[in-house]
Image (cartoon, rainbow, N blue to C red; front, side, top):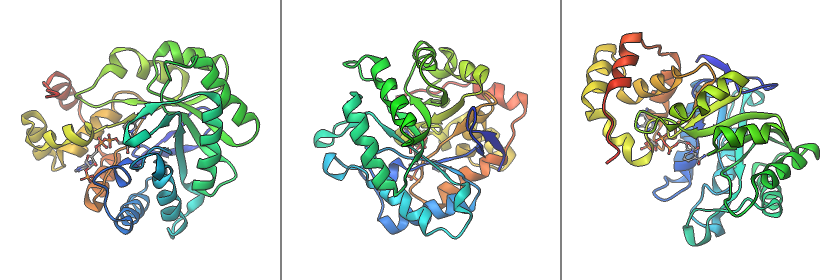
Length: 291
Ligand SMILES: NC(=O)c1ccc[n+]([C@@H]2O[C@H](COP(=O)([O-])OP(=O)(O)OC[C@H]3O[C@@H](n4cnc5c(N)ncnc54)[C@H](OP(=O)(O)O)[C@@H]3O)[C@@H](O)[C@H]2O)c1
């Protein structure tokens, strides 16, 4: 597995991380299967696991994914010190809906809950899940800066943000990572300059939904351009797409999810895959319908 720095002042991590979301939201597998998937990803060289307090069914289930990941890492026989767990605060799940709530008091309470769920004294990477339109952005970021000063979090990350918001946050705190969506169907992070800004600053860009997300990833195997390149290279269309995502910039790290061990292993394999200029351009030019 190739390595890349997580961000300024943070160690390198495998270029393919693991996103835990699908182990805890609707259609989640039994917990023992989830643990096998996480162990397979770690055995394959994954050193960054992404989670969030809201990866769960609803507000009564908050922390499900954090508890599961903590359990999996504790029971893994490898070098646990190499594993970085990144979580997030700033959203809530009333009746299962996804809503922003990044008020400072909610972020503080969420951080305390995440510390318990993860069973740690300090969270390695704590990310603002999304800006809350009802709360001044500086207040949400200020709350993370305060939690960092208190030693409850080591590194601060942002998610679902624009370049303007990243710059504003950089005035207040060292931004270590930015987590936005990036895949061939959704290229806004490239077009709107977020990936470029992260590269300039050495900020790790954590590409979420890197294979397209829960619905669109299912279109990859029958995509004509992907199918033809993947067959020639002897890799899966998912691995090809992950390699395309990683090739977009030197600070990109992809965090695919998986409920199946074979999917996690296939994604890990993409950490070794480099694409030719011609193949990258072919994917660049191909049409990816979101419908
Ligand atoms: N910050 C945010 O707002 C935000 C939003 C969404 C996601 N995320 C993060 O990003 C992570 C990934 O995003 P995502 O789950 O939306 O999208 P994704 O990883 O692109 O796709 C999810 C599904 O694709 C399938 N898949 C992935 N790799 C595969 C492979 N190599 N072969 C076959 N199938 C494969 C998996 O199916 P199976 O489940 O059947 O194995 C997986 O559940 C999440 O877990 C979460 O950590 C963050």
